[in-house]
Image (cartoon, rainbow, N blue to C red; front, side):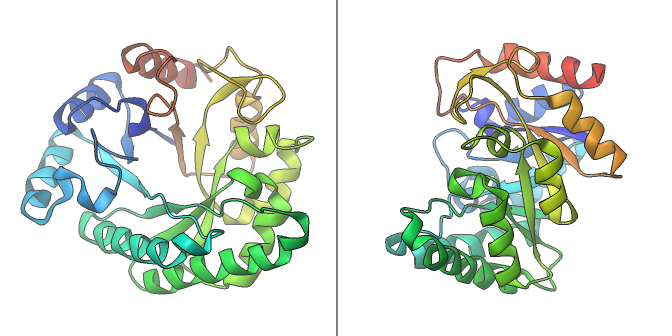
Length: 268
């Protein structure tokens, strides 16, 4: 398994600083979720057409890979449905240019239990449109265990309807474990394991999915057990640290969290 971090961790860092710090700390890659003030990956300065060649050279010089382009696409909301499809396709196009294997999308919410089946079908249609666009490009569209689709039964229902070879799952280990009454790691993996291509690691404290964010090892998410489970099942994908500094400014600075994570994960 290789180790990366999401750029959510360092919202004020420049592209050059991201690369410099990732390389010096011993990370293998980075996951793009915004750079400085731009959240749309295809509009980030390093990935504009005139800058791509230089950015790829910088990645090579630092011995790094981009592992995923993380979009804001959500498909449960009809008002954002078409725009999310277009954003997803733009991310696929950029991933092809950069040689990035994954883009990330969301479900994201099931507004009411009576709308459950309708919402799942709508989410599946949106993701199907982006996934079919990605077929034969080498790019896989990953739906994250996030929001109401942290419930692996809901995500599995989407998988069954999408039916594309270019679709998979991003397992954010915190979310199913803390969603509702909580899912044991083994149950989540039993349902989704054969579709899991990528993994987000973070730690929180408290029963709620959006509990207090902690440095890894200081919360109550069973990270060690999760990594052991993945290892036992032959997982060879990435472990990506999702430190949500962009959304939660009060948590520790990246200068603290990123070195801590690489030491923690290497100790496991």
